[in-house]
Length: 402
Image 1 (tube, rainbow, N blue to C red):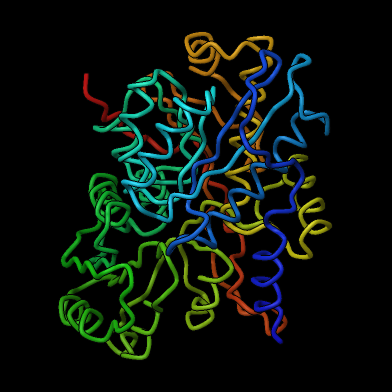
Image 2: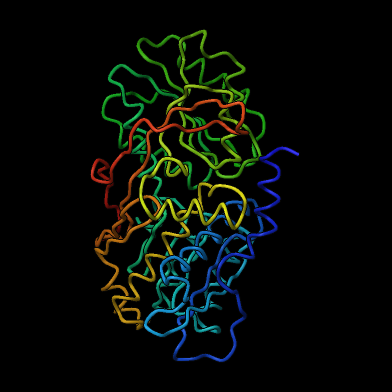
């Protein structure tokens, strides 16, 4: 059995055994801080959601020094499964706020589900901390003041990628998912590019498995262009298909390069086909250099037998952010006090310091410029650090409705 397969089995079996106890809501106590994780425990983003869940639990462990308390109040964490269905997520969040009297919610993984959940937070006037759904509309046109996000946005992905591929003489063809994450990402990339020209766009279903036709159309659009020619592959939510099979069409014969956003270990398996490929990634466990990440890598390895994957640090960041805010309010879960504490708040995470922007509550954070190395002892393409892209290098637009 390969190391990758062992990792997935171990993660799947042990995800429910992380550091804090999941209990069912019962008698409401004034000495409890009730937090619900509404996420995609099943569905097409199940693997990513399990990573977030594991990181969230470890984050509470880290931020409370293992006590699971803030100012003497016990953190009670419950979970609800959206099944990656927007209507289900919306209904479960309403139930959590209304029936279970949850003070704060975290989640989900799917951007479409997150967008459906946003109005519920506004209706109940309760905090929804979005992690890791990335569509720009979450902290943009669909946003309300009860929504915060520790997860990176599509714009942050796109702007970091633009810093890698925005060459003055470059022509770019884009391959993205026909889904909120992909389309928001392309929109953000277009806005971020200052020099390169986008000459073609391909949107394919999230469960697509055959990229031959799309790949050939991109090659045809680029092959006669002067200067640098780049096919840019957006990070692929879900792992049903392998977009890097377009390398089999031999775009190199026309001088066409492939670049991409980063992915989880499971997705990075496909990157072994493109050694030397460059791009930008949200997280890979060897890239950040700080004490929080050191703790996470060691603790996660002990608990799960593998390094932390792409979505684990986001879950940890969400937990640290909430504990930091609750420390500021001295354990008070009043929504207005939490909003006041969180707006402009900085907090340490496995990715370094993040700060919630006051205007739209998006966490400003670093990204990482990588180059793929193929190591025969590793089951996936390894992102090696070219450089850290600091938050202040990325001019992320504010797009909320005024």
